[in-house]
Structures are given as structure tokens and as C-alpha cells.
Length: 344
Image 1 (cartoon, rainbow, N blue to C red):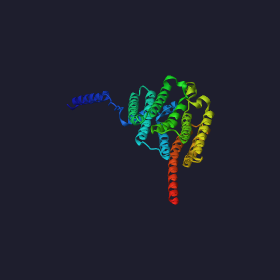
Image 2: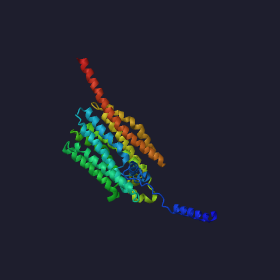
Image 3: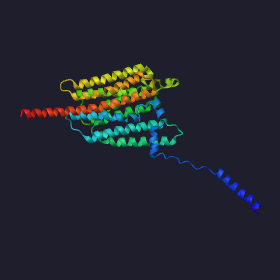
């Protein structure tokens, strides 16, 4: 009886093993495109592909929005102009959200088709940020017709930069000229106009200084990317470095940096100027490190580090200039108070 029961037991165990073997594997949890990890991946992946493409407007440029706006506000305060803080704050947030939205759409367009969730994440982020930018821009647009027209001009330039890669790639390196114009002089001028003020000599000098620094940063960011030899023809019009050579690009960076610091001296030295603006010269060591790294090294990690140094130099330049203008105002008020006290 035990022998007759043993085959039945073996057959039942074999059937169970066969079912377990043929059972469908558990389904992997599909990441939801609206989850935070997917949203972050939509902007950060693939990093190397984004580096080789060198989009004219990308998320890494977000910090460059602040210096122009802060410098304009500091200069207006130093000149004694009234500040509409709601308009200034709305402009800063609108610029940040708009740049983030355009960067998200860039990422969505270049994400592989098989990564549909990343594409949807980037498109959703881009649309949401652009809507937030439009809402934040309302106080600035309502501040006056000149501000509204200038804001629309900057939007048109951004749209041109976004569409240049699709419509006519060879119009670049137009992006290396227009992107600094938007991030430096464009935002500075928009801040001045939105506050209902007219340009003075100091304003024009600061515009030139910020534009030169922004140009050096953008060209440096393009130089860090390595274009494959078999793809240089397709990318030839996208970068000054690939169009005219690395030496010409480095020479342009050097000229832009020298011009920026020379304009700072022109702001500070003349009588009746703003001596505190010389504080912006403290960013020169960072700029020199970044420039020398791009000019000397052909090693990709070294070029990346040098480009980051140029970015830090621009941020330090703008913030130090704003602090220097504020210190000049404080010094003038102290001297005026002391003069009145001694004279009384």
C-alpha cells in the first residue's frame, strides 16, 4: 500500500513544480510619470546627451537669472528711485519659471521615444512652469506698455532659440549671442523699465558689464562639450568653438571678460560714480581660473570644471556688484549725516 501511494505523491509534487515553473513572473512596478523621481529624471537624464547637444536654454542656467535683476534693483536703490517690490519679485519668479519650462521642453524633445514616461514628465513640467511664469509676469506686464513690449521681445527671443534647433539649426551660433542678451542686459533692462525708470549712464555701463560676463559664460559652456568627429558637420553651426576654432572662442571669452571688468572700473572711478562697484573685481580670480582651464586643457572633466568656474564667476560678479552699490549708498548717507552734524 505504501508503494502504491508513493507514485501518486511523486506525481502531485511534479505537477506543483510544473505549475510553479510555468507561472507568470510578477509584474514590475511601472513608475508613475507624475512621481517625484520621474519628474526629477525628466530633467536630469540623459546628462551626457544633454551636454553634447548644448541647448541654448537649459536648466543649468537658472542661477544666472538672479544677478541681473538684483543688480538693477540695487542700482535703483542707490539712485534713490522708489522700488515696486511686487513687480521686481514677479519678474524674478517669471524669468526662473520660464527658463525652467523651456528647459523641460528641450528635454522632452530629445528624450528617446521608448522613454515615454520621461517625455510626459518633461512636457507636464514644462507646461506647468510656463503657466506659472505667465501668472507671475502679470504684475510686471501691467506696470506699463514699455515693460510689456520688452517682456514680449524676450519671449520672442526665447521662442527663436527654442525653435532654432528644429527649424534651421545652422542659424546658430546665434544662441551664443542671444542667450547672453536675454540673461544679462535683457533682464536688467526689463527690471529698470518695469520700475518706471529711464536709463542712466551707470545703467548702460552695468548692462555692458553683465552682457560681457554672460557671453563668456555661454561660450564657455559650449566649449566644454566634445562633438564627435563624424558629427562635426551637423553641429558646425551650433558653436563658435566648432565654427571658428577653440582659440577664437577663448579669445572672445578673454575680450568679454576684460571688457566687463573695464566697464566696472568706468562705473567706479569717475567723480560721482559708484566706488563700491569695484567689489565686483573680486570675481576676477574665478574668471581667470575658468578661462585658463578652457584655454589650456583639452581633458573633458577639466573643461567641465572650468565652465563651472565661469558660471560661479558670473554669479559672484553680479552679487558683488549689487553689494558694492549698496555699500556705496550706505557710505554716502553716512558721509552726508556726518557733514550735516559737523556743519550744524
